[in-house]
Structure formats: C-alpha cells, structure tokens
Image 1 (cartoon, helix red, strand yellow):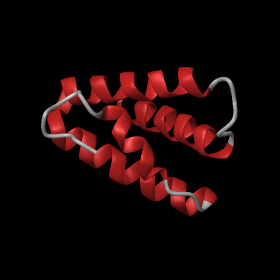
Image 2 (cartoon, rainbow, N blue to C red):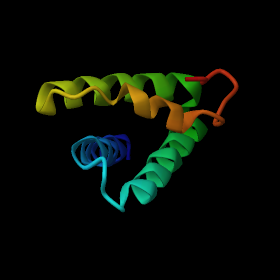
Image 3 (cartoon, helix red, strand yellow):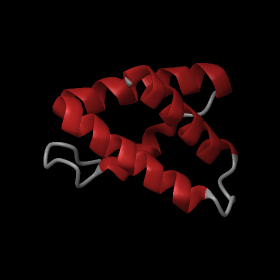
Length: 83
C-alpha cells in the first residue's frame, strides 16, 4: 500500500507543479490531503515526514521543482504538522 500511495502522491504533486493553472488543481489538492490523512492514520507524524521527504526528493530530481509549498495541504491533520 505504501508504494502505491507514494506513486499516487508523486503523480499528483508533479501534476500540480507542472500545471498550476489547471482547473483540476482543487481536486488534486483534495486527494493529496486525503493521502496525508491515510498516512497519518497508518503511521502518525513520522509517516507524513518520511513520505514527504521521499516524494520531495524524487520530484526535485525528476522535474527540478520543489513541492514544499504543498506541505501546508496536510495542516490540520495533526497539531504537530504546521506548515
């Protein structure tokens, strides 16, 4: 399951970074938030940190863009996650 969520998160964030004006952005952001909720439910704050770290590095390597601005999509999942 973790691998599938990682790949989906990678695809969603890559799409958002490459298509910032797309009308699909809102739906993509909602799914990114949903994945964050699933990750937190399964592994807590450590899961959020680990997944974001891996996905961020892959996106930077693959398309040269930094998805750090999307960290805030997971705000509210936990009091510990506040970006």
